[in-house]
Image (cartoon, rainbow, N blue to C red; front, side, top):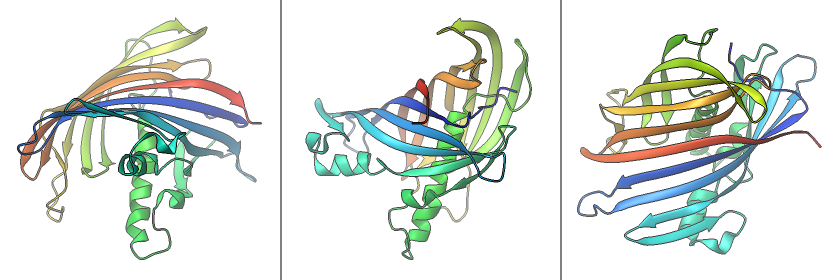
Length: 271
């Protein structure tokens, strides 16, 4: 089983580069881009009285740049004055916030906890919606960690399929079909790694009560990439995948491309 293994007493630092490109709506057909580097820490401890692993996920930094019509605007959460207030608020609002993932001693996911800090209006009536959104963010983050991993025990050369529903911000419920292959075992950074390739299709799930302003993920949307799963430390140390989407906004198709590179930069003892 190539599951993520969380070692109690360790803190994992994850760096994720997301490079996105899309076209504008209506007459504004200028290609827009955003390159974001996010640093996340995942601190693991044992839950008192059980063998469960408590994983505290904390967003500690985000920086990068936004480009549009030949103009480039840089931003950095460590330097609040590095971008205009609107950009800084949109991209830096999660910094310092956290939530908890809970796994059992067999590395099986159990539940999310403490997602309230992700909700912008905790305690208010409208905060109920914010709390639901926060749960979706936590679930999507967890699934991004597991992207491409097989749901069954595998050996080199094996293939598998995965079929599930995911909830994306703004796009809502999305059906994902994935095919994976355990290609080979390679040496990488002094550790044996399972190299896994995967590809899949995405499409929004039709709902009668879906809001009219919801972004739809149209037919023909795809995802493909590969990961290196560290067999010694039992963790996906590196992932690289590209998503090609047809986003349908108010009935208009908008091409959208996103390239994501995820890398574990350190695994250290908790201080």
